Amino acid sequence: MAKNSPLRLIPYAGALACFLAALPALGQAEPPSSFTAVARHLDPGGVFYAILDLEGDLTRFAGVGDALMGLARTELGAAIPPGLSASGMLQGLGLDRVKAIGMSSKKTEGNLFQNRAMIYMPEGRSGLAKLFGGAAAPLQSPRLAPAASDLVLETELTLSALLEITESVLRSTGDPQILNQYKGLLGFPVPGLEMTAADFIGKLNTRLMMAGRLEAGKTFTLPGSSTVVPAFHLVVSFDQLDFLFPPMMEYAKQSGRAAVEKGEGFERIIPSPNPAGGAPDFQFLIHHDLSSKRILIASHPDALKEFLESKSPLADSEAFRKATAGLPMEGNEFSYVTPAVFKAFDHLMRSAVSDAPSSFSSPLRMAMDEFGKLSPWPTQPIAGVRANLPEGMVFQSTSPHSFKSLIPAAVTLPVAFLSAASFGAYSKILGKTGSGLANEPAELKENKGANEEVGETIRNNLQQIAFAAQSYFVDRPEATEVSYEQLIEAELLFRLEPVSGETYKGLKLKKTGGTLSVKPSGGEAVGHKYGPVTD
Image (cartoon, rainbow, N blue to C red; front, side, top):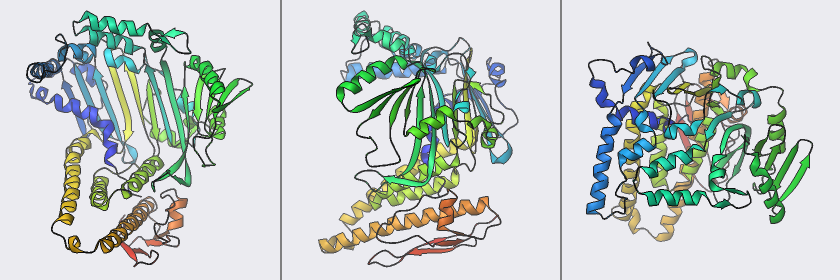
């Protein structure tokens, strides 16, 4: 399966934006005063190392924002409060306290990189940084998630900080009327909870944990679409929010849209009808564990039971130990992802793209393939930890990509998408003006269009099989041949649904390269040539 998607670059966008914003600081003749404080959290001697001094830079950029806001007021008549300023908002959001950012990447075993990043706030975390928990603490999800989990996430959220952040931003406007209106709204009661809006927001502090497992070879199709979605069982847990469960149960009873169960140590809401529709493998439920005071949302009772009673946790697995080597087990955020999740996401993206008109889907698939060469999917589990410190936040992760690779990839990304969009638009215009199809009978054009769409989708399926085979041969140097069925058994490929009566059963691929070919009903054979895999 293809190991690519430009969407993997999204988590790096914030780091890249900070890097570009701080480029002027790179010209300093002497290290900034924050160098030592940041450097002790980084790894020297790797493929990438940068410490960026932001002292005063964000404030200077805020001056540009103030000028633009002034222009909007005078020239465009925008209703912007007179006292509102970009610098005031910057202070209200706590971004003025970010004095430096550091990043490093060092190669480790298994073709992975240990990436580290530091957001340095020597005056203490404030504003937006307060939303993401307090002091670092031992991570809980590795001991709760089952060893077979493909996706595990844990993050501490201090949403009560929204009260302070919003008030700081509104106070920066210098308009007491706006601030009084805000405080008045906070005094309104929340229906069913017997508390004010301020009290409600003040209690929204939680530790969110999520554990998911892909069901090998199982998929379902979204209603009204041909997009194939991988079957994925999931449990999401919320700490400290059990005060919400009684009103949820009361609403479930009154609405008649859910059944309510009570047992030893738990309460449970089972929606009716099942939100998953006719999918028999899914039976969603909301569970209140009385001993831990957690609210858990699960895709099936068996998935919930495995999460609550697992005797083989993720923390004891060899895959987890390899993925987290060198990472701390204390923090405020944790992530663990296996290659199966990336492959499933890639399959989902390609299936969704196949639904689009060929003038758009073909160049987009081409762009996705090229990004796959630049930034391949990981071939082993990866993990990351974020920890809050008194002087900022530290991020550590294992990844097949270094910070060094993110810069050219992020620069190339918009160019590729613009090219793909332009090509699609050009194809549409050509079809309306200069192509021979413009003079053909409507019925003939419609049949040709349908055949082309079928052919494109089948070729895409064959390409996915070829990509999966490449991964198979790379992981198994001794293998010389692999079948379609073996790729599914190895969880490198999801079972492909026929587009027009064709079958992929029995297809075999050789390590030395060759051609795949299938024949749709009432049409000519569709083929895809694939190259050799070298050790």
